[in-house]
Image 1 (cartoon, rainbow, N blue to C red):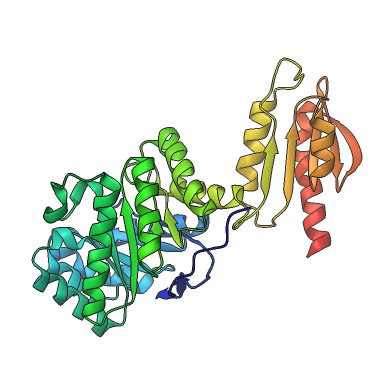
Image 2 (image 1 turned 180 degrees about the horizontal axis):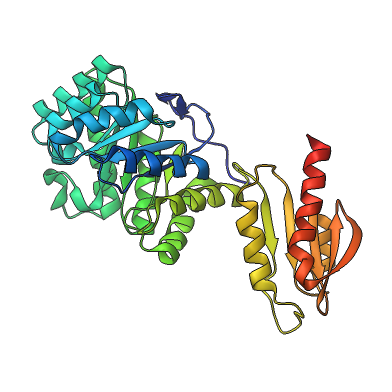
Length: 355
């Protein structure tokens, strides 16, 4: 089991509490042009359906503000404004309905500009994420002969101290790199220094496969150590995939679960049904379910009966057939072509009985 969660100060992002013992929340970021209200809201709706709880949008141009305000007003999720370089955009975003600002103080400019953003967030009553990235470190840390993780942590902590000196404590902190090891070590260092909630993630992790692996390793280590209050899986992919992977990571660690858990065997030469498409269809259909049950799809007689019996609903497959289990009891045998439908008939029956 993961270690107890690190204690942190609670911060409210719209209606979502981050830190302070609140559940680890799952975030993503839109990749639409923020000036396109309908496209951005459509993507936010898809993210919401997938289980996203906080959404971030980029504001790269000042002409995006009318659209941004409309998005904030219509979004079912708290909207975080992602701002780089121009402190005036961050200030206007705070006034336009943002639930939180995400800035990298290192690229906003002189501290008087950072202070103006802090004041705007304070006036609006919203938090700020101090987001330090390996690719955009503040100049005073960039050329130091230190390990990357030390540079990231020192920069993030220094900005926290500056915010504190300004009387601003509604802070969320992140320090990300594309290196799993550097990211993990940076968060460990920060966790020892500050009591603010931590937004964790491996930045620029990669495409669906490589990015999922790197994120699962990095976030898994941190979460297992009790570090992390909200997360984003950064993938070069549909943002909906980021949300799905985020939930899978939390589920794998038994931290949070959203819907069913699927157990399926890796297949081998003993398998006598075409199990891979069966398991994929079950997984796809389970995405529409929210009941936290365990479903096993097994391909042979070695581990199949045991796993199927231990699950809420399961199938152990033989030569062209599947033996369906419900709550540990075998209930019927069906042809291979009927396995998926038979499983979902039992799932429907279980859900009706428990409702």
